[in-house]
Image 1 (cartoon, rainbow, N blue to C red):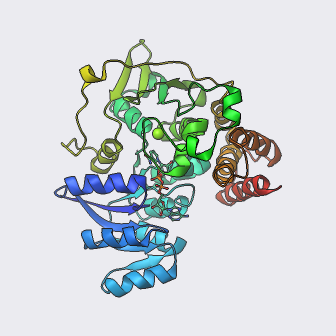
Image 2: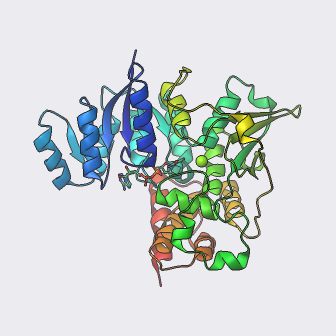
Image 3: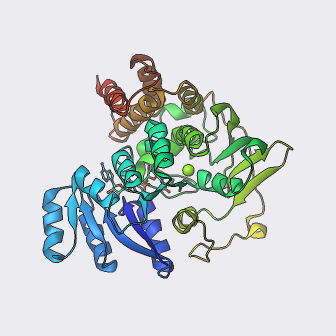
Length: 379
Ligand code: NAD
Ligand code: MG
């Protein structure tokens, strides 16, 4: 039987890779819902290609325009539209691939409506990992990891007794400035930071990969996805991005997942889980690759990992504050308002300023997120 999939953020980088998987596996996957915020033309093309998909756009004008071309489809817009798409009766699984935290409410709606979710949007787990995982448990639904590291760990952990796991080892490419000095980092431009050495991705995550906040967010994401404390989550730099992550067992064995640098594989595994199917991903040729390198992260020049470890260990509102401050600081950097090192300087300052709540409600998390953004926006 085909799995019926809704893709939130279908016009982005993860969305594009997801469409590649859907085109390659028409006997296994059926696209029943698609959303895109700004790129209506891309959404229109996808709507023509996937004739049974309901649609959600960023605003009313673009949803009206699409409705004129597709009069018999469900076409919605905005936040309410995303939640409606996430709970479509015909859907089995909702992929959340919206950048930032806008996918949080739709993710909770999908779980509450009895759907499994596949999560690319790590920010929603950093902000509200407890709410997402508790809702999934209450509804007896799955939260399937799409992020390549977490998908790798998910594969390494399959059917393993949790008491045999010593630690999770997240691999990290190191980004474009892996070997840059602190002095060089001070004058990095957005164009330089947007050139990732191994992955082609959306703008926000590409900047996060350059500051290493991406890995910091992923440490907190791993804590929630796998129910593992922060002290058992480590990071190793691996410039080739071939070993996607590892699990160390109590006896000293390390289990790793390797594949080419292509998001199609983790996306496919999450969407077709628990099936293993031949898909669009190219095979890995280790002999051609020749070598795999590993080194320790330089946390003195890249404080993001330590800031995230602090936030993930403290819990409460701190991860939401770190995440929102980072998102806002990345926007400020991309628009030329702050320097590259000011991204982590701002995040650290905001973590000190927003009052800490140990057991926040969802509303308190949203308020902490807004407060963090406001402080970054101040002159
Ligand atoms: P992207 O910027 O390429 O695409 C984002 C998508 O979200 C687009 O479809 C856009 O229209 C939609 N969108 C943006 N803001 C929205 C809003 N406020 N409301 C509704 N829709 C909105 O981003 P991406 O690189 O595809 O990343 C998406 C998510 O996946 C991020 O959380 C990122 O961290 C994560 N992720 C991406 C990759 C990758 O290879 N690109 C890998 C791992 C994880
Ligand atoms: Mg990742």
